[in-house]
Amino acid sequence: MTKLRVIKIGGNVIDNDVVLQHVLDDVARIGEPFILVHGGGAIATELNTRLGIPTAMVDGRRITDADTLRTVTMVYAGLINKSLVASLHARACTAMGLCGPDANIVLSTKRGTVERDYGFVGDVVNVDATALQTLLQLVHCVVVAPITHDGRGQLLNTNADTMAAEIAAALCAHASVELTYVFDHPGVMRSIDDPTSVIAELALADIKPLTASGIISKGMVPKIDNAMRAAAAGARVRICGPRDIHTNAGTRIRTEHA
Image (cartoon, rainbow, N blue to C red; front, side):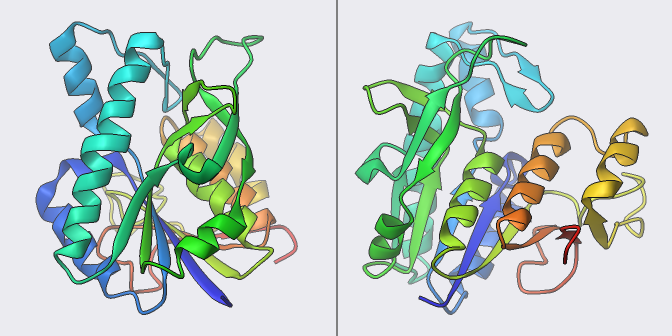
């Protein structure tokens, strides 16, 4: 396998069915095998609200207590993952849905509590790139939910942007990897109200001033951090809107050496 695309779709894409169906139409047309990583959107938060479970977010990352771990596992690895797989099959795109514990694809360790206790949140320590490649010989698309495990029986909630970046980084040793983050804006924007303000290219040196000015904030913080991580590993990384999967539009991530 010489070329591989990893595509991550965000929660706001999943929450908007019209947008989601358009995105699925586009990804189903990808000619080569690909990996689709997805987040959870508002569905898990809505379920928590119904069950009386409080939702807490810090810098775009969910605090995951034991009750929240149960609901996100049900929603991410269950409802959303299998719905995406079924929708791809409806588009004649053979797909398999899984999460980190399946075939030991993604192994994590529970995040420490020195700065903040995020609960049952996992930081990725290993991705089995060989297993993913083997699965892609059987199906056209592997759909990955952001649930991982620690190898000792504990499930962990892992940021979907992180999952996508770690998978892309691991596969860079085996293929030419393109990682595309698809969310509800046309790219990283200087002004959220101005669609012409997309930043065409971001380098590491740009991150600190853009964060200080508030242009990069909330959920964009982990997205940019992970995009930089994947780019440093050798992936070509782009952040774009839901109608730009087959274009070159959006924000390209550049390492200092590229």
